[in-house]
Amino acid sequence: MEKEHQIIRQVYKAKDDMEAADLLIAEYMPFIRSETAGFLKRPPQEGQDDELSIAMIAFHEAIQSYSRVRGSFIRYAAVVIKSRLIDYRRREKRHENVISIHAASGDDDRPLEEMITDRRDHGEEIAVRDATRREIEELSGQMKEFGVSLSDVAQHCPRQERTLAACRKALQYARENREIFDDLLRTKRLPVARLSQGSGVERKTLERHRKYMIALLLICTNGYEMIRGHLKRIVKGGDAL
Image (cartoon, rainbow, N blue to C red):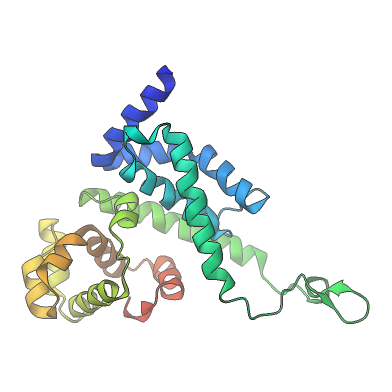
């Protein structure tokens, strides 16, 4: 019982303290991995299974939406994680008009994966993963100077296409007007007024997604080619990055 009360205290602290939220996520990564493994029916592979990232974001969502009246936080978080993973799986199934490499091919019933020569350069893959990890660590450290954490980015990421388009528009304006970046780096604050006036995006939209915009601007300011390349693949309209 005392352990449950301790978890609840940690959760309520993490609602308003980004460092506490990051620490709580790190502490419960074994739980997050376990829930993901239960969904996948196998251990998740970091860097390969998007489900693990979905589960981490869902855990942060559970922190923000939890209240004592919901009972045990762990049970509540498990429900939120499973729900988000099911939503993700349903979205993925809409794009399944492709042949599975695990499907039998021809008359010998051999899976396609056994008939495809592995042409990947595994050494290069490892180098890319290491470079990406270093970029993420560097970006996380830089964002702390601006009072922003990775969990903040997940929380403030636009959910609606219209809002996402507005943020892309503001980002494009910043890319075309370097003084926006200069102001951000000098003051450690998003120049909302100038960005709104110049891009035509409503100020309240930028205020609501301020931490998300700071993260995107920092990514564009300091290179982060691996992260930018990943975002271009997974974000609709990512060519603006």
